[in-house]
Image (cartoon, rainbow, N blue to C red; front, side, top):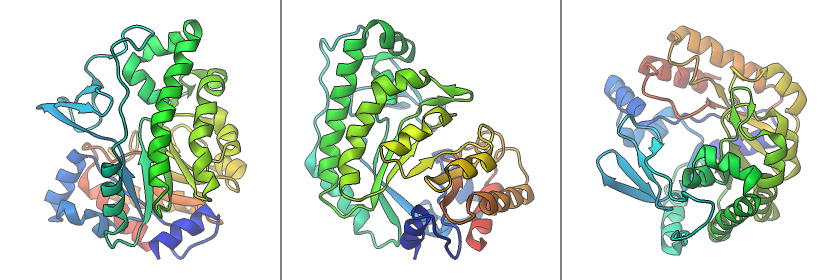
Length: 332
């Protein structure tokens, strides 16, 4: 039933209740499970979530608070439980001297995919690639350096994106050997007021490679999901053109949800729209119930909506608000 609800939402059809998904950061999970005596391992089913993601990101902690990912980037997470900040950039100059790109591990991909596909949950199972292009590039080069490279080191940028894309394509090819329900990409392009790099540079450097990544998935007839924080309204038509089916996060402090639904509601399924930035940390449980209900009524009209927080719920959100959201979603 849950898998079917997502399929119907993607087909812009009305479901018995609007499908939803709630993910928590480690801090929020700790607070919630302690408050309501729910085991972390049971949260997915307790919440009634509809989506599971098969993540192909890799790495591990090299010392307390410092995580090294599959590219060798070290993330300082000592200040919290989110992704952290890059400890030092590996591509200090606009070249690849001394740097080696990762190689996919087929055994790991097989193990992770089969574990989620065979876990017995009635869920829509998405293969996931995080830090797809822009985020991966700046994590290696540095945000300011990469933005300058767009202008003064164009060949380097093109080669960097090509190498990243090539790595991801090997993951996609292997994941598509299994009956996954779709693919989910994470790549933040937006800030509160428009694109970080602007639409012209996005179309020049990122769109062609994103098209390459979407292509084998669309050829399989599978849906493509994309997560991007911020205002990416300038490229929504471009994303639809290259095959995007579902857009997350849909921040209500950025978008006019009425206008968004009216303009794109027949072409995009929206995923998110319950703000973790300016609403959930500060609202009362009653306000959460009211706002979630209104959001479902707006974006869920005629289908095409998966209700969710705009991001993994951070630790500053009261557990009572998370419970109010769960209770409301189960009833809508």
